[in-house]
Image (spheres, rainbow, N blue to C red):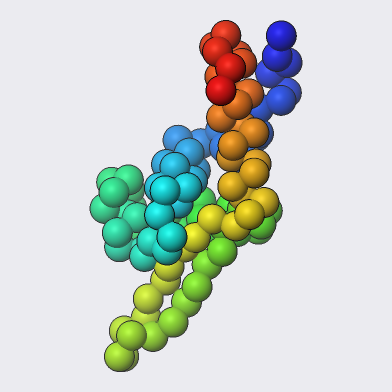
Amino acid sequence: MIKINQLNKEFESRVRLGIMSVLMVNDWVDFSEMKNLLEITDGNLASHSNALEKVGYIEVKKEFVGKKPRTSYRVTQSGREAFTEHLNALEKLLGREL
């Protein structure tokens, strides 16, 4: 049996679920690619990625390519573990074990 409080509150947003899902299967993903994959606005991606960075679940890299700024994301080890635990808790809630 699972208690609902075993689900990670940081992943309640569909945007955060999307960000983490993309990063779990990719090394680095840049801002434009992430925005297009999830079909969200710049502000939406920026605010949710900032929240995930604050808790240490993703790493954000800002650099210049030529004269253009480029922001990229990748999942951290603690983010990978937290997201896997969250998915496992969801599976238990659905009555399935991974």
